[in-house]
Image (tube, rainbow, N blue to C red):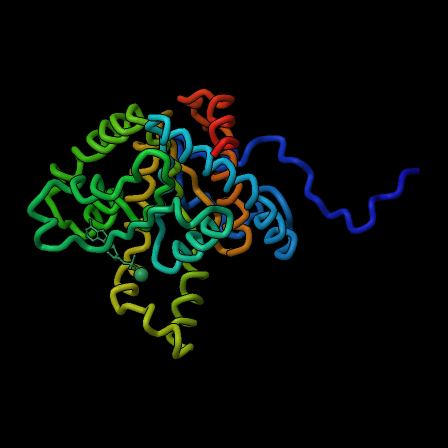
Length: 291
Ligand code: AMP
Ligand code: MG
C-alpha cells in the first residue's frame, strides 16, 4: 500500500474554484453564512499562510503582464473592492493582497464619511476619481456600496433616493467593466460574537485603542439592519460583469487564503498579455551591440 507522503500536507485541489464557492446568488442571505467555516484549502494556519506566500511569484508576474499590456494600449485593470462591518479585517485583507503583489502597481483608496465638498457632488463622483488606471490593481477599503448600506440604515437620504441607487450602481459598474475594469467585490463576513471580541481587544490593548470609534458600537447595535442592507445590496448588485463574493472572515488566516485565491483566479482568467514589440528586435540588437 502506498504510504502517504511524509509532510505532504498540500491540500487537495478544490473541485470548484474559490470564486464559484463564494459567489453570491440572488437568494443570498448573510444570516446563513458561517463566519468560521473553512470553505476550501488548508485547515491549519501555517499551511494557509505558506500557500498565500507561494502565490506571490505568480500573482506578481500576472500583475506585471497587466501593466505591460497597458503600455501597449490595453485598458484592462483590476478593482478589488472590500466591504464589511467594523473589525471585519479590511486592513488585514489589504496586507494579504500586498503580500502577493507588487506595491508599485497597487492603488489603495479608503472611503469614509463624505466631506461637505463631496456631498455636493453625485455619490459616484469621488469613487470614480479613485478608479485604478489601465494596468493597475485598485483596492477599495469601503466603496460606493456605503451609499446603499450605512446611508440606507441611517436614513441619510430619503428612501426613494437610495432605492434608485442599486440600478444606478449596476449601470455604472457595467460601463466601467466595458471600459476594461474587472471587478472583484468582496464582503468580509464576521460573526457578531467575533466582532465583540475584536472591539474588546481594541479597548484592552493601549496600542489598539486608536482603532476604536465609539460609533462602532452604534453600528453594532444596528447589526440586523446592516445585514438586511447587505442582503439586498449583494443580491441586487451581484451581476455577471461584477459579481459579489462573501468571505467567511472570523479566521484571519482563512480569510487571507480565500482572498489570495480570488485574486489569483481572477488575474489568471484575465490572462494579460505582453504587447507585441513595435520595433525590429534583430535590428535593435545589432544597434546595441555596435554601440
Ligand atoms: P472606517 O472604515 O472604520 O475607518 O470607517 C469609515 C466610516 O465611514 C464608516 O463608519 C462608514 O460607514 C462611513 N462611511 C463610508 N462611506 C460613507 C458614506 N457614503 N456615507 C456615510 N458614511 C460613510
Ligand atoms: Mg472602523
